[in-house]
Amino acid sequence: MNERRDYRVDLATRHDLLEVVEIEDACQLSAWGWDAYHGELARPEAIMLVARRSTPDWQTGKSLYGFIAARVTAEELHINNIGVRTSARGRGIGSALLRAALATGRRLGAHTALLEVRAGNLEAQALYRRFGFEVTGRRRNYYHGPTEDALLMSVTLVRR
Ligand SMILES: CC(C)(COP(=O)(O)OP(=O)(O)OC[C@H]1O[C@@H](n2cnc3c(N)ncnc32)[C@H](O)[C@@H]1OP(=O)(O)O)[C@@H](O)C(=O)NCCC(=O)NCCS
Image (cartoon, rainbow, N blue to C red; front, side, top):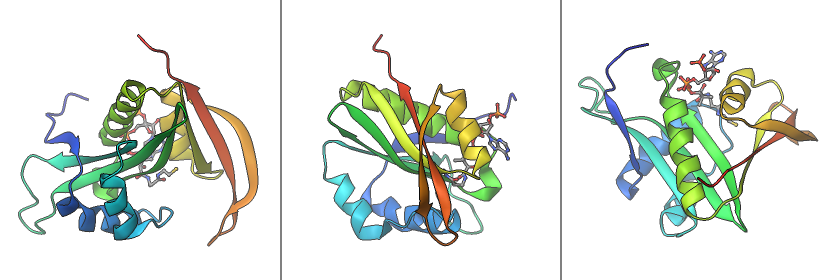
């Protein structure tokens, strides 16, 4: 697709967090909430990125298409949450967020990236596979509401 990009991947600030929580809720992601994300902003090992629109939506005033939250611990980058508004999906925004988080994780010294994903979430799994993630395990009944297994996926981050 040759669509012009009308957003940029940017560091999240505290002013973004209300929208981040709104997207988290709309995407039915594991609920971290405002306080937890606010805490992440102060952690040097945390990566909080947003896809920021070039101009806010003139009708709603919304500025963000999506976000990703990750953290580097002991040379592992944990992708904790990624979400893109339904109306903005399929335009490469999830890929742009994941690409940026993996690059930042590498810079912070991560050798591997890990995540958990609902076994039935094929869209997200397809995205992760495109970035080289492979299934490395399964946690039975890991998710609730509805109960579902988690697939563990990981990829080796090659330093270049
Ligand atoms: C997963 C998610 C972040 C992808 O965001 P996105 O902006 O649509 O992703 P992209 O446009 O970059 O798509 C990247 C790849 O994802 C996969 N993908 C995206 N939408 C898809 C769909 N509807 N069906 C199948 N695959 C899909 C494809 O492999 C796609 O590659 P392609 O463009 O070459 O086909 C988004 O669907 C989302 O927010 N889902 C709800 C929240 C969620 O499930 N988060 C993950 C929790 S572990």
